[in-house]
Image (tube, rainbow, N blue to C red; front, side, top):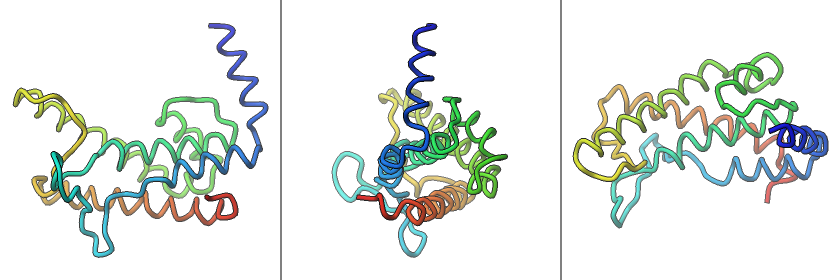
Length: 168
């Protein structure tokens, strides 16, 4: 395990402040967008096995993880847990400082929604998966999901502005 920590320290040293590396992370964080349309409607799969569903992991939790990972590398934060990273970044990163509580609530909400969906799948004898049908959610959960996606989109816009010269 000691060797793993040494490697991690070495990689952090060579990556810290490396604009090319950070630009690559920004590209990853912006590759997917939240599944919310112009009029705040959910963007769901149009055809196939997951018609009328959206992937809550790929289009939700992973987006937050990618954004927070980028911010952690910007500031040289070595924590690996998304929650730990947010709690450290809330004091030292401008974007996270402004939105820390909302990010934590949104991430937690998405994780609970995903776990509840997977539990429901198991109870129905279906393989647990990350696709949910937003129209089957309660009105409150729909509203919270839309607010979560709007927050992610807003933060992605800030990242795009910051890294616009490095975005492919």
